[in-house]
Length: 164
Image (cartoon, rainbow, N blue to C red; front, top):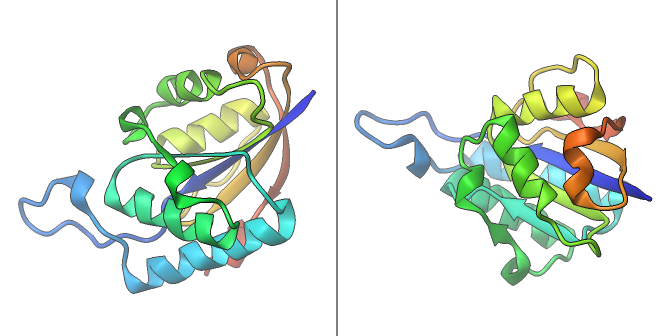
């Protein structure tokens, strides 16, 4: 069975001001525009998602909510997982591996460098570093998400050249 993992870096955020914790950074106006464009691209290319996982950091959460609105995905159904904040690839895989079997297409919104490393390892090829609001789709031949640790997939699509 094919499952699709849509991996999205949060949109552009403000640089931290002195003594501001990284976690608290918010999206810029341009970042909000990027998130809207990413949501539009996802709707045109993937129509719907079964699940949306997001880091709880404000910049990732607002990116996720903005995209969800474009996909007609209920904001109440977004799963905010604290383990996704600045997660390494191993933690991202663990979180994805816990998804229920009925989920066929999932959107993950998080942070670099973990997301880029995850894409490179899942696709088995070099891809550019994810810029803000970039999203990459990876098709995975999985019976259950828990097998994601053992599988490589195929890059389907991305919006990297559109996010200027």
